[in-house]
Amino acid sequence: MGRARASVAHWLTFGVVLAGGLVVVSVLVFTILTAFKAPGEAFGSGASWLPKAFQWGNVLAPFKIAPFDKYFLNSAIVGVAVTILNVLTCTAAGYSFSKCRYPGRNVAFTIVLGTLMVPLEILYVPLYKIVYDLGWVNSFAGLIVPAATSAFGIFLMKQAIDTVPDELLEAARIDGAGEFRTLVAIVAPIVVGPMSALALLVFMTNWDSYFWPLLVSDESHRTLPVGLAAMQSNNLADTGVPVILMAAILAVIPTVLLFLSLQRRFVEGINMTAGIR
Image (cartoon, rainbow, N blue to C red):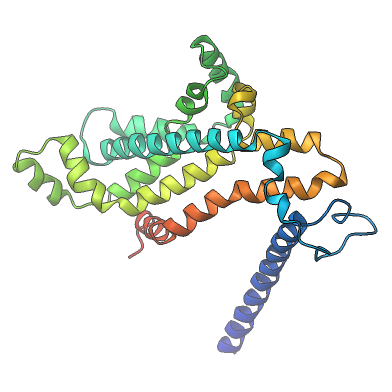
């Protein structure tokens, strides 16, 4: 009876997951096919799953109706800069909280974790005031610096660095290596997986960020989410639906490619952080 119940539960779980996967895939396929449709085929009486004729010109259409290349470049600059800064600052802070001994270390780490419970919406007003006073509104500094580190990233890297044997660090210190050299030469190569996982999560989060870029950026510093929203508001008719969907697909491509390239490292990093061997 126990095996029968386990088998039923297994196939029931498989069926639920399969159904959910089919729904997600069907939506994705419909989006891609609609992006290649002609005006008037997306909705209404003339709508269908397959386009009557693939409109390959839709691939370039977002660049014609808006400065889409500028949005893309701005998102790339912000995403890459924020990702690099997060990997550096979170790894250094995680190393400090994990392997360094100093008064108030545990209290400081508890405070860092406590910030995870603070909704971002509460921070936007004082953060905007600081950015405004520094003269960073409508600049890349206002988009990059406030997101240069994260409490979650510090926690993730601390958990990963906790798994590094203290004996390795002691041996490096006996050989005369300082803390910076120990971090760079000993610790960093061991926690490449968690660093890759952090980089992927940070890049995807900032690539899709909408509200903060909307607050602090003008038209010349718009990122893709803000630019897509502006494009959508100007192309609400059925004729603009395929173009907007094509723009959304183009905007997703970098994160998909990054995930595929870091997939193995991402899984290794999550397993290492969770203590799975």
